[in-house]
Amino acid sequence: MSEKKLSANEGIKTRSNYLRGTIADALNDLSTGSMSEDDQQLLKFHGTYQQDDRDLRANRRKHRLDKAYSFMIRIRVPGGVATPEQWLATDYLATTYANSTIKLTTRQAFQFHGIIKSNLKRTIAEINQAAMDTIAACGDVNRNVMCNPNPYLSSVHAEVLKAAQDISAHLTPQTRAYHEIWLDGEKVESSEEEVEPIYGKTYLPRKFKITIAVPPSNDVDIFANCLSFIAIAENGKVIGYNVAVGGGMGSTHGNEATYPRLADVIGFCTAEQVVDVAEKVVLVQRDFGDRTDRKHSRFKYTVDDYGPEWILAKLNEYLGYELQPVRPYEFVDNGDRFGWVEDETGNFHYTMFVEGGRVLDTATYPMRTGLREIAKIHQGDFRLTANQNLMIANISPANRPEIEKLLEQYGIKDSHVKSALRLSSIACVALPTCSLALAEAERYLPEVVTELEDVIEEAGLRHDSITIRMTGCPNGCGRPFISEIGFVGRGPDRYNVYLGGGHAGQRLSKLYRQDFPAADIKALLSPILNHYAKDRHEGERFGDFVIRAGYVAATVQGKDFHANIKSEALASV
Ligand code: SRM
Ligand code: SF4
Image (cartoon, rainbow, N blue to C red; front, side, top):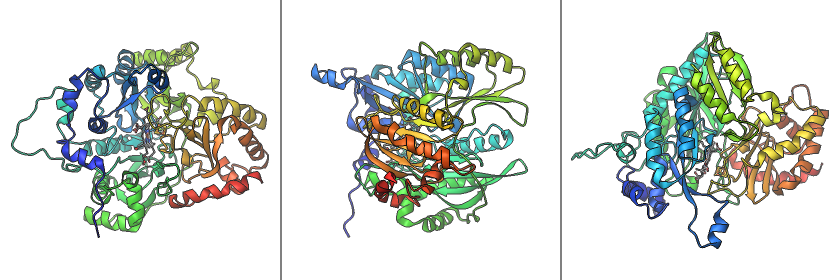
C-alpha cells in the first residue's frame, strides 16, 4: 500500500528548528506588514495570527493597495483566572497596541486585534512582563486548558483549577524559540539537539483541547473538547475524574467527511493521575493522529477511526495501568450563573454579561473603564468564563460595597439585559478580522436576539434560558452545534439554522434550514418559540421540545450529522 503524503504543515514544522522558522528576521523587515506563508503557520504556535481588516479589503483593492495587515494575539489564561494586575496590563496593552478592545474568548482567554507588525514583538514582550504568555495559545499543541469557575464550591474549584494549571504547565512546549524571538532570550549554543519531550519535532497533527468541569455545571462544554475531565467530588474533595475523549466542532460546508462530534466518556482516573492521563492521551494522538490530511487530523477523527474502545486500550497501555469504570455524574446546563453569589467561605462573586465577549467602551456603556476602575481596587481575581462572560471573583465582604458602587457608577448590571436568551448567547469573532468568516457573527447576533426578544416577551419566555449561538463559518468557534438554537454562516447574510442541541451541551443539534436568509430568521423562529411557550411540559427545555414536537429529530453522534438535512420536510408541520 502506498504511503499517503504528509500535509504541508508537517514539513513546515520539521524544517522550523523547533518553531523558529525565519520569524526573528522577518519581524525586523518593516518593508511589508505581513509575514511569509510558512512563518504565518509557525506564528500560531507563538500565539499570534496574521489577519487583515476585511471591511477595508474592497476599497484597498480598488486603490491597488495591499491588504490592511495586522495581527491577532491570544493570551493563555489557564483556567480563566487573571489577577487585577494582569487585567490592568491587558487593558493598557489593548489601548496602546491593539484596537482598544479586549475579546474574552470561548476558551477563557484574552485576545487582542489590530496589532501592526512593528508592535508585535513589544506587545508579546509586555504580555510576558505581566506574567502571562501566548505560547501554545494556538498551533498544533495543547491549547489553553479550561476549567469551570464554579463559584459555590470554592474548595473543589481550587483543586480543579490547580489540576488545569498543572496540565497546562506540563504540556507547554519546551522549545527555547519563544524566549529567543519575543523576549530576546539568549541563544544557547549547544551541540545537543533541542528536545520536545512530549511533542517531538513535529508537535501534534493538529490543535488539541483540554477542559475540566465540575458537575452539575458544564459551562466549559466538555463534550466539544478533545480531552475532558469531569470532576467527581465526595465530601467537598475531588476524588478523581471521569475521562472523556474525542469531542470537537469544526466542519466544512459540503464536506461530509468532516463533522462535529461529542466526546465519549471512557473511564475514571484518580486525582493524582490526572496530569499523567492528559499526557498519555496527547501521546496517543501524537502517534496515531492523521498527519496527511488536516481536515481529518483532529483527535475526534482518531477516536472515530480506531473506536473509543481501542483508544481506551491504547491509553491503558501507555499509562501502564487501567482507567477505572466511569462514575455517575450529571450536568444540568452549560450556561453561566449571573449576578452575585456567596461561596462556602463567605466570599462574593459577581458574574457579568459581556455581549460577544467584547470588552469595550461605548458612548452609553463605559464597561472597559468601569472594569479598569474595579481592577484598581479589587483584591480578589477575575475569572473568564467559557461563555465569553466575566466573573469578578473572590470579593471579601468588606470590599463588596466599594465594588458595588463602581458597578453602579459605570452601569455594569445585568438587569438592563432584557432576556435570558441574550444571557445565553455566544458569538464568535467572525468579520472583520477572521479570515475564515463567511458571514457576520459577533456584530450580528445581538440584532437577531433583539428581534427575537419581542417574541420572547409576548410569549412569556423572558426568564427562560435558551442557548443561542452564532458563528461566521462551520469551524464552530462559538460551539453552535451543541446549542438549542444555532446559526452557522454560509455566505453574506445567510446561515444554516440548527435546532435541538442539549441545554447542558450533551446533545448535537440538527440542521433545520439550510442557507437561510438572515432577514427571515425572526419569522422562522417565532412560531416555534410560541409553540414552546404554549405546549412545553413542566421544566422542558427548548432543545428537548423541538425534538418532541417534531421540528427536528434527535442526533446520536457526529458521523450522522449530515443526515440531518432531511429533517427540513418536518419543519412545516
Ligand atoms: Fe476557533 C480557527 C477564533 C474557539 C474551532 N478560531 C480560528 C481562527 C484563529 C481563524 C483562523 O484560523 O484564521 C479565529 C480567529 C478569529 C479572530 O479574528 O480572532 C478563531 N476560536 C476563535 C475564538 C476567538 C472565538 C471567540 O469568539 O471566542 C475562540 C478562541 C478560543 C481560545 O481562546 O483558544 C475560538 N475555535 C474555538 C472553538 C471552541 C472551543 O474550543 O471550545 C472551536 C470548536 C471546538 C473545536 O476545536 O473543534 C474552534 N477555530 C476552530 C477551527 C476548526 C478546527 C477543526 O477541527 O476543523 C478553526 C479553523 C482551523 O483550525 O483550521 C478555528
Ligand atoms: Fe472565524 Fe469561523 Fe471561528 Fe467564527 S467560527 S471565528 S468565522 S473560524
